[in-house]
View 1 (cartoon, rainbow, N blue to C red):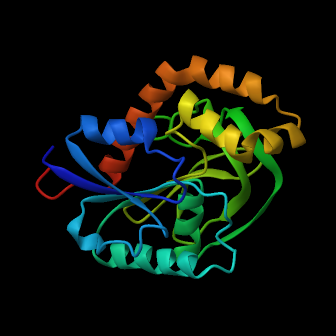
View 2 (view 1 turned 90 degrees about the vertical axis):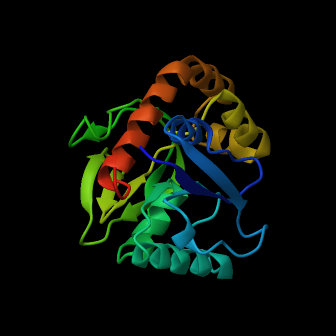
Length: 227
């Protein structure tokens, strides 16, 4: 595997590429992390080998100019042949950008969840950390890779991979979310934040391994030229 430039799009300063970023770096990638929209416009996608789009507290359906800008940028990346890995909001952005839609899920998912995988070699059953209230109505051209009773949990469209769960999260990342209002969200649906944090720390070694597998899947779906 050759040298890779990966642009990481995060939407909150408490967010990190975490285990997914580490897995890309372990494969020789250099991460260029951008906070959007706070840092200004996103860079031209053609200068990168892969794009990683993280989550957000927003809905893709929110009437915010930067969301439309991000969707247009994802379409530009697609035209340039740059593969995208979308996580949670990033997955929903991929769905909305390429002919699907996003709607409110029948219930919020917060916690560690096992998914039904179409191909466990591509998407492990988990458990994966969930923290979302919307779900994807996937584009007609998309291929489902994993589901559960709430929503599509993973899909591909073209060279892009989208996952509804959060493979990047470790204990410190989750604690930042809980401290920034996530604890109230969890309590509202009957999830104990302290128990969730304890479980997340306990899952860290396995979560790191699952993240490595997921990045391998993303690269298999979109091999670099010459690899």
